[in-house]
Amino acid sequence: MVIDMKRATAYLASFAAYITSVNALCASTGAQCCGALAKVLPGQVFYPNTTVYNERVEAIWSATAALHPWCFVLPESTNNTSVVIETLVVNQCPFGIKGGGHTHFAGGNSIHDGVTIDFGYLNTTTYDAENKIASVPPGTPWQAVYETLEPFGVTVTGGRAGGVGTAGFITGGGNSFHSTSHGWACDNVKNFEVVLYNGTVINANIDKNNDLWQALKGGSGNFGLVTRFDMYVIEFPDSANPNIWGGIAQYELSAADDLIDSYVDFTENNYLDKNSSTMLYWVYSHSSRSLIVQVAMDNTLNIAYPSAYDRYLNTSGIIGTSLRSAPMYEITAEFDAGQPDGLQNIWITSAYKNDARIIKYAADKHEELIVGTLAGLVSNDSALVSLCSAFPLTQAMIEHGNANGGNVMNLEQKSGGDNGVLFLASLAIDGEENAAIALPIMRQWVDEVDAYATSLGVNWDWQFLNYAHGAFQQSIATYATEKIRAASLKYDPDQVFQKLRKTGHKIPTES
Image (cartoon, rainbow, N blue to C red; front, side, top):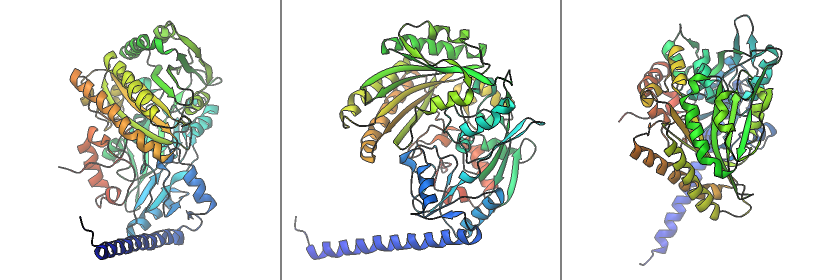
């Protein structure tokens, strides 16, 4: 093949000029958008290479999601938030939304070419003791919420890992220690304060804007900017000693089959003790070349060693446990320690009927593809840690949603009346290059588990939004899509949160 060097040179020059013009356009648009915000909200807009800007990037838990926007805007009030969205819309600025900053995928909570709305300054939880309502802000981690509420002897349905943020957790559904006893976190929101696309502030509850209230319970950031969650509180049995019982038990790998059977039995009988919950998971640590299996247990009534855990605790092969009575925020801090900051993260999820075969298959594939294949492709000193996790999905959880006014998570239809297993394949690793190697292997792992579940007739075809990978999983498509779309068209008629918003999980386009 003969290469026309003149033509090639001309092409390269043209392409370079195009890239330069694109960069110049982005810089120009960025200056316009950030400048417009700085004019109306002085002291709340932060540019690259400044201390606050760098702190906001570093506050994002997953390095995969820690993108660098044109600027961060940190509203200090609901009124400020109205000004932010009005300004962005007038100037047609692309934007991202960052609450607590615990999303795992790129584009989850920040943006490269655009403005990131960062709710980090909306971070104060308050408690109305007379009405037993906690007002939870969008920009704080659950750890801070629990610590604020503990002196009052109350808590809320929040994250089990303390570093998880409030906003995305609630609007995606939110699985908590209290899910079987009280339902998903979203089902315990009495009222959402929401800033719409045009800056209007409304409340969504059972009496006002009821369709939006339902849609926000699982529909994520597709309707507006939530600036406050008014949540029903849960009282501890002993307000003077507001503890729960729980922790983690670690087992030898040889115990796995018995633990799977114990997990399936626990899930089927969880209705007998709705105050106890569990998580079964395999952990591979590349630094120690170790694969172990662990069980998280907790009882929110602070009952030590309840009978719901008898099968687990009678299984041989226990290496050690951290089970004890402690403040809930201490338990959540322990769980959070397993999710260190600053690493590349990949999470992929699915859901199945509660069946021992599918859990065993998922664990076997984890060992084959991650412990076997992937571990051989990264350096010996890589920080690779992977988890194969199973969480109960019970009919009690689903029934609470209906009793509390309904949500859009669509589990009543997807479950077919059965209990299920929420499967999460997760991985943390150092370096973008290693993450790029890991991603197709992670996808293969989940694809093979899904295919096996389908062959058994136990695949629910449902993806939990809080765990789903936004780049290729369509979690909203597995939720009550038409309800979500209807609320979006009604409350965001210009589709600002589909067109200008560039982060999070979007409503799929109609075919």
